Length: 168
Image (tube, rainbow, N blue to C red; front, side, top):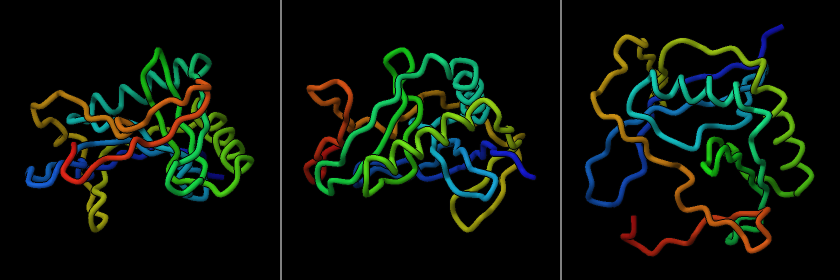
């Protein structure tokens, strides 16, 4: 039977309108049946940095703080993991019910320490595969996927911050 695994993806980094599109690298944790369990909260510019973020998560999984909450616009449930005050992982999708969100967060946390790390980078466009040797772009600043998340007053839930058109 196949184990859960971390897959690395080269994907367009969300940018403001008018800014040239560039690719970043993020990891995704998938179950043995190829369903997404969760993904990194940060785009990395270098494969080695993205891989290291996986190793750091595996090493510190007992110290992560799981947070669940709803998306303000839809009412659907999402989760994220924080480590030392930084968002390190987010749910791959939203859920209709709180119990579904909790269940899927638990599956993610169970898979983190045992998942194998797949070598190389896959392209999120048209399924192209890019070998690990081509990872270095020379740029080292990560971009956070969860940058628009705001913690609720309860301290246990979060929701995306609404953005105005043209806002970063």
